[in-house]
Image 1: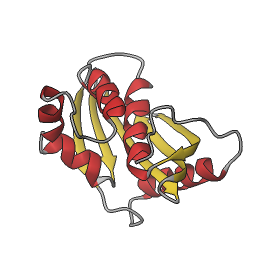
Image 2: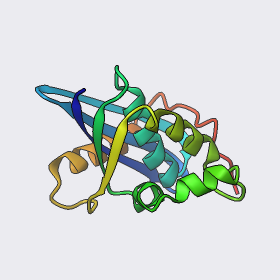
Image 3: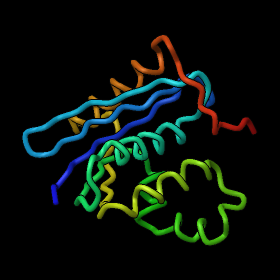
Image 4: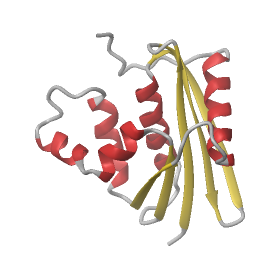
Length: 151
């Protein structure tokens, strides 16, 4: 199967506030950029939403995928295997269970490796994702993040 490289970023203007995600998908000679903005959400939700949408955009199962993200929230939850413990406990007391369950469904259809990158640094594609996320958050026609719950 294909080797796919994905860069993701999420942003919230206010946290909670308007938010957006940006994605760059790379596979061989192919490149695809995705983004969307939401009326009311959080930064962590947008970081995790970006990963979900990116994996859902893959047309075939069984890919080797490397995801580069500046979200320690997402990267460490997977790399430290915390999310699997949360799942066993039904995500009790955890934030964003809707997105974590969505993530696990699609994550299991591929071989995924996460790499943390420093945000707003020299990683060109991560910076592009940030531009996409901020533009989406500041744009018109914002979507509703139906899973967002105010605390």
